Length: 191
Image 1 (cartoon, helix red, strand yellow):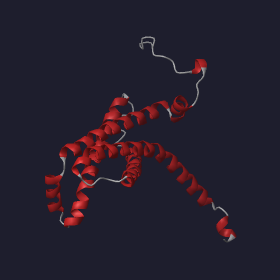
Image 2 (cartoon, helix red, strand yellow):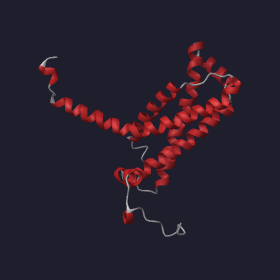
Image 3 (cartoon, rainbow, N blue to C red):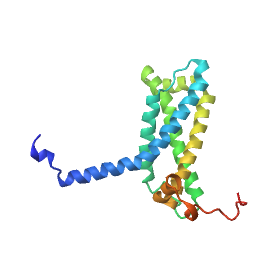
């Protein structure tokens, strides 16, 4: 290895910092969707086992989690997604959940359509075949899972945005000790 290549150039440090930042940004949603998609996969396997239908693999659930996590982060950068930053959190949670659920519906449908399309070579014929052969209750069961999981994800993301990442990490992963712990709300009934 030459000495010129071994020494970091100014641009390399910036690239490294950018990669490190991107990694830490994509890690939380990736973990969330990795766990979520594997739960959905297990649920699908349990539902479809009796029909002998082909199932997605753990690898496809993992790849889907990585893709969705990055797509969510990219989508979050558009001003259309953060329409209600000054309103109560529920506005942004419901708005973002709606956007992500619509995208998930399209992706979930395409997940079933693309293999048939490749096999038949005709989009319209593939769509007709899919409409006739898809097990709709199972399709909608997975969509319901995704609605709930995306709602939870959006709610957590909005809480982190308002409370702050460091405070959330402190609350969940550090001992608060004694009087500095979380205070009870006055309407909690003294539980």
